[in-house]
Length: 347
Image 1 (tube, rainbow, N blue to C red):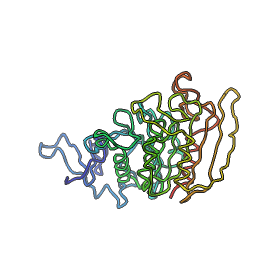
Image 2: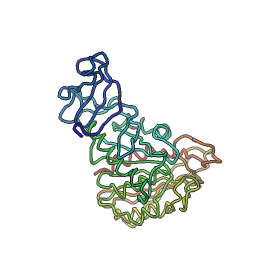
Image 3: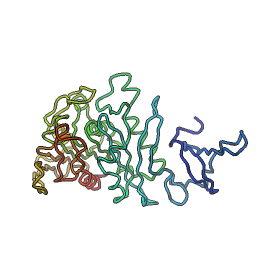
Image 4: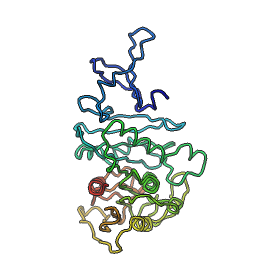
């Protein structure tokens, strides 16, 4: 197409002339809606020369996208995601990008509240996006049906990275993913199939699918920090078919998932084990950490077993009753630990 693919949905912006207008950004153009103009001139091209710097950021150093909901056409599907941009995002320097994937039945916006990654982004200066899966789920296994191929979640993720890289100075060596449940499994799939772009992943309450594991041969090592409750009633710590969800796919156990990635990343055989401090006597969970030391490419594969923990985000809210999802530990905060791990495991 002459103007390229759309980069944003329709939104209100103030142009260089000081007019507040409805706009939509494309890869090679920016359109403005001027309803008071005569019919042939209601839609005008924005003055890109005034608005864009060579870095791809608008004049004044501010990114061309702000916090809010956006769309991205990928194949026959209009995909959606929620974006959080820190008010004081560093200008004139590359910044990290974190993609956080919801669980089956969830959505990006609710996952922002569950994980609190946006507050971490404000503190640490990175862009964070919360994509939405088609039908509220991610294809965490290899694409085998025509529908899977058409949806192309891996391709969508790559296209989303491209779109955000047009709007921000994204550091290509610091692109990370995290997610819970089905979103955790999809993070493992991305590490297998999109290792050229993803430096590290932080899966929570999920595991790699057996079919994905059988064909996982990433071109580059990917660092992993994993969290899973040993009493998870939905995705069993010991593997098998999840008790909820539509896929019915068999998952590896969490110990086997972690062992697979230690093999892939060429980690040393000697492991370091330690129990995390127990902070609240009323909290009946506990946390054991197992870390590897340095693996190939400066990676690591660390695992936190939440003893007695459920299908939950460590340090997050008890988003459903204990009888449904199990207990949420407060001995560790997954978001804090994941970001600390990401910050020290980039390329």
